[in-house]
Amino acid sequence: MLETTHVLTALAIAKNISNPFLAFGAGLVSHFVLDAIPHYDFQGKILKQEYYNEEKGGDFGKKEFSRTGKIVIFSDLTVSLVIFLYLSLSGRIWPNFPDLISFAFFLFDNLHLAAGVLGGVLPDLANLVCIKTGFCQPKWFFKFHKKIQIVKIGIVPGLIFQIALAIFSLYYFMR
Ligand SMILES: [Zn+2]
Image 1 (tube, rainbow, N blue to C red):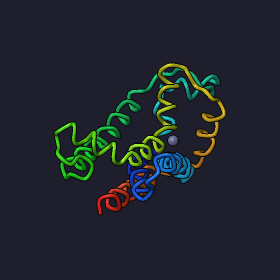
Image 2: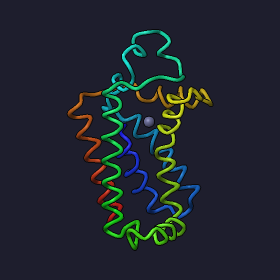
Image 3: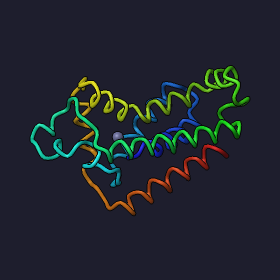
Image 4: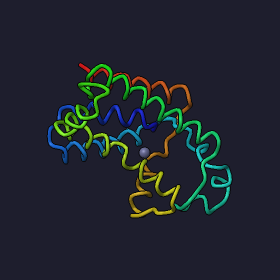
């Protein structure tokens, strides 16, 4: 599933969980639950094609992103950044934008939000580290993360669902 959806869902969930550790756990669980829902996230196109053809492609280790993969990741992060700016400018997560101290204080007072988002993106963050550096431990974590997302659906229903969930989560977080 795309990162923007993971981030916004985790934010919406963390909103009502004041304990940062619980919020982190809930974010992490939400990641796996979302990944298990049939979705479309350009899987099979993110890495260079050789990794999908050769047998070694099944192993976890250092790999290279394809051009499509880079575009998808860049677009996904850009959308997340735009939403971050929107939440900041609206004062929802950054009271005195662009005063850094006010943001630091907000984070300190709302550690559960940061912890929830961290939990929500952790599995994909670990994947990124694995692909870039070859450090892919513990193996069971990566196997589990890969195994739960077998069911794929078409690009249109797969993306519409994610966009709808992202918008709903953003709306829920804002109100
Ligand atoms: Zn994932």
